[in-house]
Image (cartoon, rainbow, N blue to C red; front, top):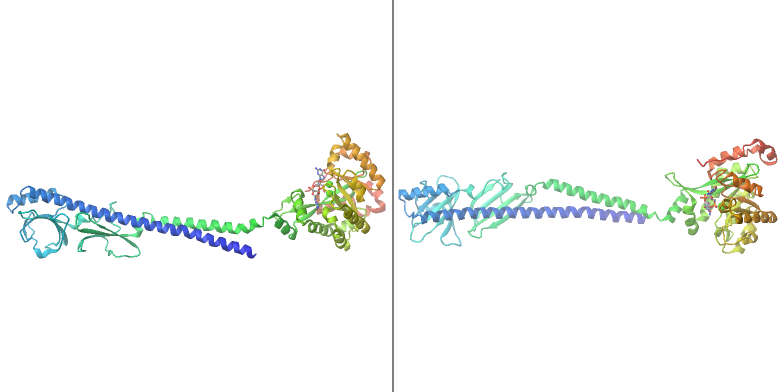
Length: 537
Ligand code: C2E
Ligand code: CA
Ligand code: CA
């Protein structure tokens, strides 16, 4: 029980670990995806700003190269044309020696006090200013190109030209972006009102321009980073839960599989009473009456399947559980057929006893104690010992057999003809009955040596006052042969297969009615039905 719980706990812990690992891994993966996305956004923003500044510088240099060095009407026209063709530039101005605006294409005049901050660039001819517009239009980035011995030219870039309000996919930016000078002076912002500060649900990426003293910070809402972030997380959780469930299910089945230990399974089946007796009738082939039955064990499993003994008897014998199994069968026979057999003193019931059960007094004690209070007399008990296997201690076995006979029981030598001991067991053990194995019964019609052996056994049995039972009789011609050669008892499918207790009880009532038993048997035999073919249903 303790081991069972330990297994369950360990498996549950493993299940939880395996469930948590994918969630941990998945969350990590999402974070890395987010960091990568926000870094790409910041870098592409700064690259776009760089491009706009670069083009503006190029346009200003073109204007200067075109000879614009004063505020003549022709020059102002040239400024207008440049603004018209150079993209996002709002205005171009010609500046005086102190930086004051001499003239612009649109006429707006900036005074030096509108310049909020100035940033030199890696190119000494290019200077960036953050300027405030005259009519409350917000801030502009002013790109100034200083040409030696000539008035400087300056272009105003509006906020939208620097930081687009839309994301790369055309939808509103899922977060915020801020463009500043390298010293932090704000130039422009885009996106929602979110302040660019570390927050749980935002990821922040920063990038600096390689060419100009500007920087971009981008804050993206985490949810928007991976398109189906939530769906993916849900899938991750479901997969993790599936893992956990699978592990837990395995854990629950683990102890079951442990019980698959066949010996433990047999022990449990013994306790649960799953080994039950079946009864194969032994028939008097001269008159069709029932002489008795051989008890053959069946394993009736919990699901109702019936397992034949060939599958489990070898293990039951080698594990030593055979003693308990035999006792259990004897007790069950007493309970289910004690009255029926006790009422018919001529009938006997045979049990297969493992050879090791004959080694000491165990079988004597078992038989004595189990049948003591039963209606079944000890004279109705036959114990079968097989000659199929070598009998280890023949003298001890002989003594146990004699003691059993002293109690009134009879002993049968089973499977005669299959062992390698010839007639020695028959001669040495002093049994009461010999059971000719079905191999010989099968062979008597076809093989001469089988007939010779059967005849020898019949003669020997007569001399030693033993009875003979022929096993595995399947056809009527075999019955005929056995009857003609002096064998009067037989069992086999030609009469009946091994039957459950209830079917055998019905059979006893039909074939050997109690009133007809005993001294009136001869008369009753005429009236009672002879045994035909039956099924184990
Ligand atoms: P066994 O003692 O020689 O039992 C006779 C076997 O022959 C039984 O098989 C029986 O069902 C089968 N049989 C009966 N009539 C015919 C027939 O006409 N044709 C053929 N082909 N077979 C027939 P089962 O019941 O499967 O038992 C097999 C063996 O298992 C038994 O052979 C016996 O050695 C062992 N066994 C059965 N019950 C017990 C038990 O309670 N204790 C021990 N120790 N062994 C048992
Ligand atoms: Ca037998
Ligand atoms: Ca047999």
